[in-house]
Image (cartoon, rainbow, N blue to C red):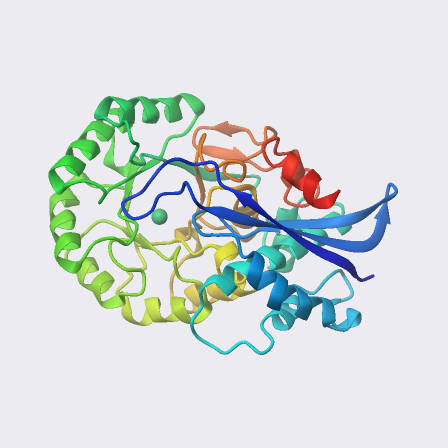
Length: 385
Ligand SMILES: [Mg+2]
């Protein structure tokens, strides 16, 4: 068994929305196909993966550095007796890369490494959550908690629009929500939060996300202003690498903080745990395998959290899409994000996934089931034609 070819397609994100820091209109994603020499029903078995939402496609890094290294590795070194060895794929991909500076290459490798997990699951003819659970010696969760991440800033916006959006999520079956803050003044954001709370009914069902925008002074002012709302969490208050800022806010804000979606390596997470003041009884971790070298590295990150005394159920990976749904189920993490109606073709789940009472069911198609997502299917067909 060996790899015949690896292809990549840059797919634009369909999203004319913004958070406090970035517009998503120019974002794109790398969709990767790992084509094996195993034939089933007259066609090769193909593994599919992508990095994640909210960053960029990594076509150049993949084409010029990562894919040639994986394809040059001796075929038997990438196998482990069961399927493809994703640690070996990672090690081939990072050959000749210096430590530190975990940026776009972490997403490039994440996209291709995750495609190998999809391939392994298809070779075993089982959904990816089953493959992942077996690898990490867990029992997969048949449904996982999911929350609706929305409340972006729109060109034509208003409190009524925000409330209608949240009511729409309740009608779909969501019972927890997240909205953006930091893209308006503190006073205007407090009005947004109060308007949202009228729909959500309880602060424990509403999280807010500043997308790393605040200085210590701004994060402090917001933290003091929203402390009494009892919100679900206060996300990415400052620069994701400013661990001292995180620690200072943890010292004054009594509710949960959430961060980690912009930490792309084991070592970055170790720094957060050593210096960020994260509190094991409440704070939330949001590292995303597709942005941090894939599931081999992500598994090491979850193990590190537990070594430091944190509970994996406080891990809610960034990125509301099928790949992370399988990872959350297979690794028994706390829950998943969802972006209803936005970030197509990658955002959200397939029609087979049923949402009820704030939990979503897993699809039973082999692999991550990306082919069963109608918005994504045409891009997969183009990539694998
Ligand atoms: Mg966020």
